[in-house]
Length: 233
Image (cartoon, rainbow, N blue to C red; front, side):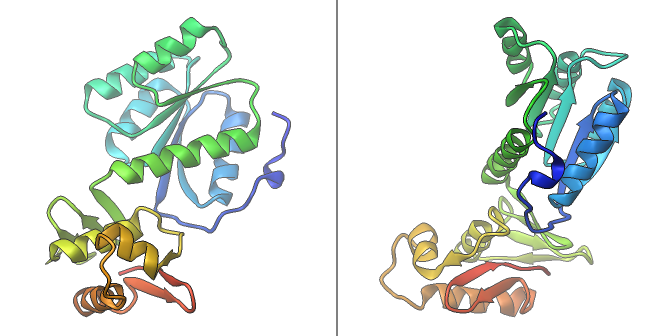
């Protein structure tokens, strides 16, 4: 691993991103946990397959990193068990084995990606970011601060437990913002993506006004001169 953690590009903190690392090498696990914590992840560590299974079934993670050579189980077998229990969190398998057959076994077990040790830190970070983006693109339940957007139900679940219903357009706009929580979206891009290129230039501002009326002023943040990004409830 050529790059040091300090050499990696820093990203804004977002404690809602949750990462599970299943790795029996304690030194490597601690290093990775610190690295991803700096990148804004809330990290859970599991030193073996049994603990990894428990955390993966109960933790609500966004991405998993699973070492193949665990002391009590093969990481590929752990992943196979998780997929069999309907855990669909995207997973990257770390392994010391670089043979094609080993990579195929991991991918066939349900891994989205496979990385051979030793690896470059920047490459690992980039691959995990890609998995997280893919997860958000496909997810129907998206974090909004302490609450959640349930895009399938067209509603926002507030921290109090209350559910606030949204119209179809309100939901589409909030989801477009929530799947890229640190990105600033221009009005033109949102008008094209959410409102099918509507000619009314104020349509994005109008629906942001509706969302703020239902959910509070901070749910969508204005970036002056640029556009909007998702805020918090």
